[in-house]
Image (cartoon, rainbow, N blue to C red; front, side, top):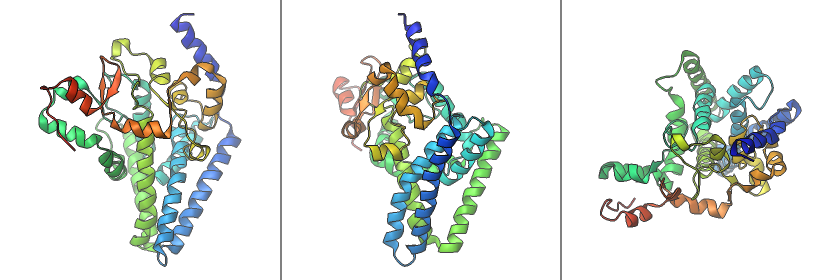
Amino acid sequence: MTNAEKTKKLRKDVAPFAKSERKKSILQMMDTLIPLLIIWGIGYYFASTNPWIGVLCGVLASGFVVRTFIIFHDCTHGSFFKSKKANDFVGNITGILTSFPYAKWRREHLIHHATSGNLDKRGIGDIDMLTTDEYLALSKTKRFFYRLYRNPFVMFGLGPLYLVLVLNRFNRKDAKKKERMNTYFTNIMVALLITALILAFGWKAVLLVHGVTMFIAGSLGIWLFYIQHTYEDSYFEYDPEWDYVKAAVEGSSFYKLPKVLQWITGNIGYHHVHHLAPRVPNYYLEAAHNSVPPLQKATTITIKTSIESIRYKLYDPEKKRFVTFKEVEKLYSGKVKSVEV
């Protein structure tokens, strides 16, 4: 069987799972949004008298915000409902709850899907990543800032603040009017929501509950996106050799999580399935993985191995794997000066 035939068969085998079921989607909204609102309500009710309860509720709510984001994410792919209007409506509501502008993120994320693993088309919807040659060509100052950006304390600590407060609030220069208006709409609704909460419960309560929720959820979201494409033997190729199916199955990990975390993250750990067939709703990703043997050969990442992947900072096109800064310094001694961050 040729590669083209294998590709065709793989997509055919996954196709039956690329269907939404309204009952399942509505049930998922209920078991996600209702607990989220209840936890937030409890947190705000007690925040003024017992701040620790407010913080605890913020921590618990962060998991449900991640799950809410998965619903938002499915809506951007048109996979949560059959109706485009339903996807757009629920996508905008969940976008407000998670502070993500629906139209802006949808366009950027679809570009990410169309270019994932393509070294010639990086930059939109991706975590910035340089090749070894690109890194070595940088000045000492630019190397320092790249290392700073890839530092876990910056990426997962300051990253959520930048994502929620800055990146999500502004349009790209090439954004069309409809996309711009949607971002303005989301910004206004988020501002009204926060203002109403401050007026009702005070700014300290909002900081304790909403602030903690969004910070942790943002950090978890960045972590999930990072680990699903950053592991030692991930797939990256320059455009002439780049292949969509290989990028999906070999360049997206199967993040094997405990059942509780799998539920909270809406099965997004089956990322290889999602990249191969974005129209498969999150509640069918596991079934698709279990039913299609070739998908079970995807790189499996556990919590332990995912933590180890934090050290990978650069991609080496010649070795076709991620490498650490120390490896680069050792391999290219004399060309790059060590900069500790």
